[in-house]
Length: 191
Image (cartoon, rainbow, N blue to C red; front, side):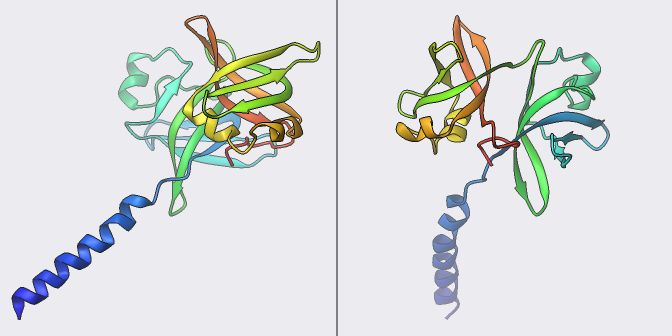
């Protein structure tokens, strides 16, 4: 009887396990200004243009780009993030706690900004093409995260998206988009 019970429990655990692993964290992106840095609590408060504040918790795996990491910043886990900086932050949320996946500085030493009209998004090739005011169409490589952000705009749908803002870096002579935002979407297309 005990053997059957143990076998039944083992099968139940085996059946339940894929459900746990199948659920992926949904990554949300938000653009704003760092309002507060709490090194002791390992959190950053980011205020968006509409005044909404997001408290983002830092963990060891949180990637931070655009700041010179000071020795103190590296030790406290905040990587030199400063109040007043414009940022794009990608995070997941569970039980009301927002955990940072990636935080990128916008501006000097960080992401560059470009605006234009969406032209095409090619998820397979990981490219986003944008038409500027002078009619020039420029194709940008895109990170996996940016492709997900822009993913709902493919082919002709991209043209309907209208005006967009790209946040990019230049790597090995190529422009690489890290974040993609429709201008009618204050938080970003990843939301």
